[in-house]
Image 1 (cartoon, rainbow, N blue to C red):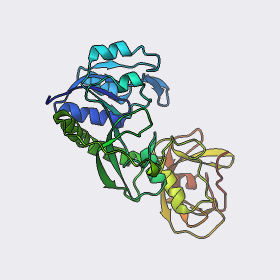
Image 2: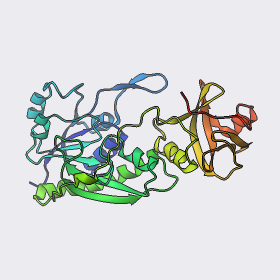
Image 3: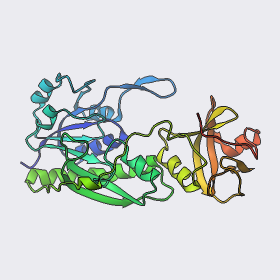
Image 4: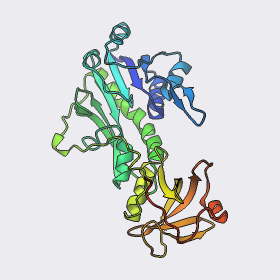
Length: 314
């Protein structure tokens, strides 16, 4: 078997980029499964997920079950009859009838070097934790969360100023070729199966709103890493003059000492905020109820002034 019949399961942009690559490489993608359309944007319009848009552009059948647990999708799966199921950021645990349905198995592209960062937010967590390296792993899916045998992996450095959004784009570009090599090895019957060392596993749950509220009682490096890991989503916030301030661009900097959260310097480039150790400069922000702007413009409009305190939003 040189070209297995593939059912592709994925939802966000990360998954779309990998689907596009497999299509361009001539893979036999029989159908696509993604999450249902969802409300998004400032106008809260019903929006199709990126994978759906890509699939329809290439004339592929698209299925969007609201749930997989009730077994209603099982009949459809039998009709598709895939040789191999490829899962990339689908966003939902797969029930046993799917895991057992394809002769060549169900494989997943995961955004970490397993067994590190199992779970929903491996890219964000690796940045928040200040990791210098990360990567991708292809693996066989099993009933446990990201516990399956590994097939291939690829490592990459994390730039010290790279945001989660930027790293996601880079990993998506690396993911297509890694997936393609994995599929080729599976088709030849030559794919390795390396069990994970479960004693070394770490976990990467979704980022909570609480975690995205900046606490300047932390070191400047930690504050900056949280900003990077939450950029662009869910985005970080602080409380200023009783209102929520969304911070959209930041850098590490040197500044006068002050109590954590104190605005110790203001100027054309923005506002410098003291942390427990070091300082960060806010470059761009969005005041509550207003559009994003340069922090220097906010300073000029006396929106933020020296000696004020930014608190963790509560």
